[in-house]
Length: 421
Image (cartoon, rainbow, N blue to C red; front, side, top):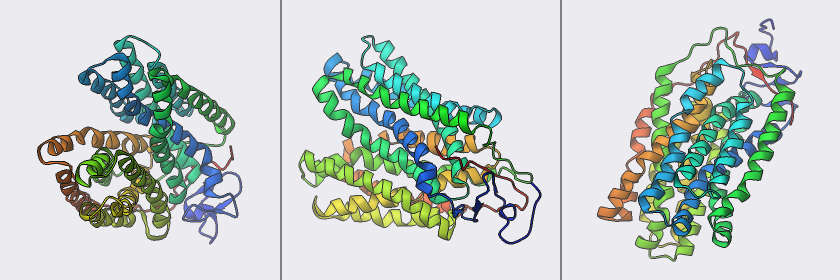
């Protein structure tokens, strides 16, 4: 496609749309389809994939009850899933960027579901461990390929990418909600009930790949340069955000019970408030970024986290603190989807690698650091954990100040998938 400097020409915006629809700089289709219609398949796929990330910790207590595993053995199951999902993601991202492997998202979500589902049916601890490792590997396969495919559909719209990112938050939230009743009623073998969603979504993704592979090409840039320095800074911001998320997610229930003297039921409501706030914050972050800029939104998000966590820490009672939990969830997750897209903008020739780091590796590192808060809670109580959490965002705030806005280079070419599923 020849470059054009005429106003309204899609090429002058650096975006090539293959179905004849125009896109604005923000990536909105004119008149086109809504972001939800474009992103619904990828949002649902991300939700199902991350459902299995949440299914593993939800099922671990039932392995202890039904199989009489020790606490060390139980923690080993979580370690297997974490290793499988975290370590391979950068390498999977490199493969996604160098080869046409659009089928990998379908294979990944299927493997994630089948591995986690079969784990409850086998009797050998080694077999359970290997199946959960395979499930984690499936998650690792999905994120880079899914992030690249979602970006192809979203174009330059951060709002559209926020729908994809929010799908993962929804899946993580739904895992204990759906799994706990089944596990209580049927035991650990109930994990098999969660295999069908993975198979169905994997089939839909494979069909989508077969239908659109002739129209969707790797994002290329004739003058684009990968900017690793700001990407590394961005990765640091995401690690801090992930530490905050896992810190609150792990200890918010215990904080309600031990410090605010609430019932276990109300503690569960507090966790739900935080996670629902996270979904809202993810979606809001995308909308804000389309209006004010990507880096500025990350800086705004990291700035509001501090007062949000302070509000949670000083709330006088369990019911008042529920509102603070929602606010904290929103604040912690405002930068989430923005960091995903900004990472891809910093590495324009490596969208799979960028997605593998921002959606996978950096998030997993945050989860691995979170047990440090367990040591603090053991020594000083859960209130000390939330006191420390109030100071953690300051590091992200400093790092975010060094994030530049991505520059669009005239002549860049982006291939955008506008074929509806």
